Length: 435
Image (cartoon, rainbow, N blue to C red; front, side, top):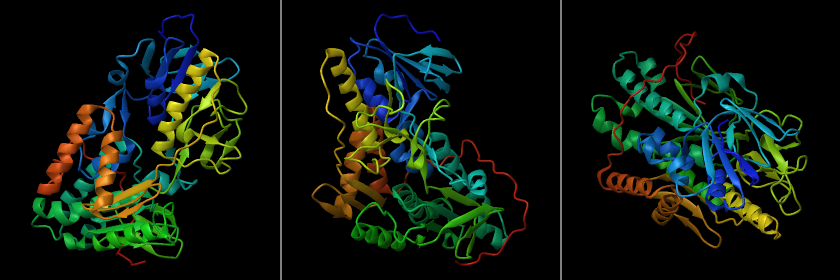
């Protein structure tokens, strides 16, 4: 790999997500050479992926070039590369563009979808963890509406316009609300000759309530909002399989749907080389309270890939962007202090609260000492997400889009640039059966 030789310690950072980017921004490169590796040349603001999927925002609104973010920092090198393997004994990273030796390694590779070993769901459901996933989903939703308009087969039309979202966490709730707004306010203008009353949006949650990480009051408020918007919410329901456009659940019910979106679970992801490492829940590498691997020195795991195991965090920390950003800043401080010969206190997570938006003027927010619902929570949610976006241009573009959509109810251009291709189903067209 073409990286300049240096007498400074070399830190290799795998991943330019929330944690990796914060580390790069805050580390003092007088003390270190920093090499950042990522399979994309842009940072993705994942909390707004659902708005790209529902045609509310364009992908360049939530993606920002990594090199542009780091252009004013010296001694930082970014390489567009996919990491294949990490040799912990040799302190070497192997990538598709060559090998690289490190003095310190930071793994901030985030999370991937957790299908819990269910191959039928993994093969047929649509995930939403990347910009590509979101664009695939957008093309699928809009393409299905176009196809439904051109079919005279009522059962086929119902199958095409029946959308199933699995997972009642923030991602599933926000996506369900966005598709409901698309159905209620946007699509009737684009497709006046299509009876959209047949379009169904189903949100399936295995727990007894949606947004289980929030209080029961907020969960109930979100549930009421979704149902008012026409979303059918199925609680205490576990999806067992999905093939031939049939979603089967543990209570014997089925949904006949051409589209199933998976938002029910994530797990830590990391390159090969950590197979013999101690893992915690959700496939996350266990670290100490300084974010260092317990089984290897000078190797640090940040964000969703790592799981702190200490007296203060016996169950680890949630897989949230806020945790990753705070850990990235903390790691920069720890490394800067180490170079100066100073000590750093263990990592402490500052929980600033949880929030989720359901739709226009509808959101729930739980901050440290306050709980909000409705329009106030919605404005708080928008303000927080605008501040967290990387890049002034992205903030301006998203703010203008949101303002225009608020007054005009005309979100996005709804272009199908690349039609989504799905495997042909082998079974017959089924009748819709209620759960």
